[in-house]
Image (cartoon, rainbow, N blue to C red; front, side, top):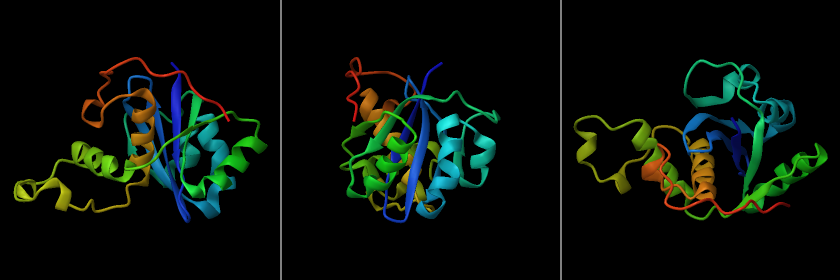
Length: 167
């Protein structure tokens, strides 16, 4: 089965997410930019053992995932480092608009980790996730590419995905 690899670039770290074509999150994590060269090949090969220290979310116990058939890269200004690294490895990728993915990532966090009894009475917009959510922003990029609403991450599509644009 083909997977997507979504990358949410930042100045100091980047989030990554392996996503099934239905929109389901398979694994995600955050990597400091200083370790990009060291860990990028693990991402491109689907080697979760190599990525173990960086994994934040994971479904199942697989040590490997199929290498990604499609690579998505957020459109932020910090993407240049990732662009250079991907091009140097001969990889084709698609740029996805990343505006508001942090807000979508918050929603996804609370979907994966529902708040406790008292916290659920606090409006979602006022709740702050207890960890960085760059990986979930990458998942939000993949859902945007697949045109799956964050609330329907189980796989329902509102319409067919658009063909990928390549860079």
